[in-house]
Length: 457
Image (cartoon, rainbow, N blue to C red; front, top):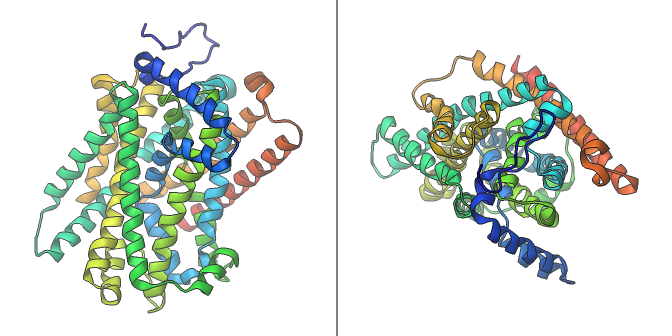
C-alpha cells in the first residue's frame, strides 16, 4: 500500500484522503501546515490575506466549472431583457453557494473523509449512487454545449481574420488542449495539482480582462449599476421571475457539490487549512464568478438591452456588440472571453468524470484507467457537429436540478451530526446562524430547481 493512503479497514469505516499528494509530498504538506499556522497568527488582516493568496487553488477549479456555456447563456439573456436590473441575482446566488461550500469544506477538512463514501455509509447507499450518477450524467451532457459554443465562437473569431477552419480541426485542438491540462491533475504529485490550478487561474484572469476591456469600451452607467446591485428588482413577468429563480438555483451545480471536496483532498488540505479554505472560497470562487458575470451583464446592457435586442447566443451577442464597440472588442476580445469560459469548463467536466467514476468503481486517480475515465466526458465533442435530441438536456437538467437540493440536504444533515463531526458539529449562536444560512441556501436552490424544471416543460 502506498504511503499516505488510508487503509480501507472494516466495512463501516470511511475512506479518508486521496493518495495523489500525501504519498509523494508529505514533507511539503507539513511545511505548508507550519507556514499556515504562522500566517494565521499574524495580527493584521491584510498580512494574513497576502499569505493566503499564494496558497489558493480549489476555488479556482469551482470558478472554472461554473463559468461555462450555461452561465454565459443565462447572463446574456438576463442582460438583454433587463439591462442592469438583475445584477443582484448572481452575487446573491453565489453567496448562498459559498455558504454551503463553506460547510462542505468544513466537513472535508475536519474529517478528511471522501464524500461519496460518507454519503454511502452515513446517509444511504441509494443516495450516493443517485448523486454519483447525476454528476456523471452532468459531466457528459454539459460537455455538449461547451464544444458547440466553443467551436462556433472559435470559427467566428477566425472568420474575422478571413480564415475558414473546419469544425474537426477546432475540436481536435480543444480535445488535445483540455486533455493535456486535465491529465496534469492526475500525475500523483502536489506540483501537478498546483500546475493545473494555476492554469485555470490564468485562463480566468484572461476571461475577466477580456470582458473588462469590452466594458471599458461601452462605459458604465453608475446609477444603473448601483440600482442593479442593491435595488433587488423582481421582474413582473412570469418569464422574468422564472429567469431570476433559475439563476438563483443554478449558479452552483450538483457536479460542484461533488467536485469541491475532492479538490480539497487532492491538495492534501486538513484542519490547518480551515481559514485558508474560507479565503479561497471568497477570492477564487465568489469574486471571479461575480466579476465575469457582472462585466458581461454591463457590456450587454449598454448595447443589446439599449437596442431592444433579445440575445442568448454568445456569437450573436458578439456580432451585435461589434457596431457599438468595434470588431476587435466585440467579435474578437469578447468572444475570446467566452472561449475561455468554454475551455475551462471542458477541462473540469473531464476531471469530474474521472473523480466520480473512480469513486463508483473504486480505482485511484492515476494511471490508464483514470485517464480513460476522464475521456468519458468527451462524448460531448459530438455537440460541435450535431444538436442533442431535445429530451436529453431536458431529462438531464431535471434530474440534476432535483439532485441539487437533495445533495444540499445531505450535507446539512452531516453538518449537524455529532457522530460524524464530534466536537466540531454546529452548536451555539454560531451554529444557529450557520444553520439558518444553510436552510436559506437549500430553500433558494429548491425554488430555483422547481422554476427551472417548470420552464423546461
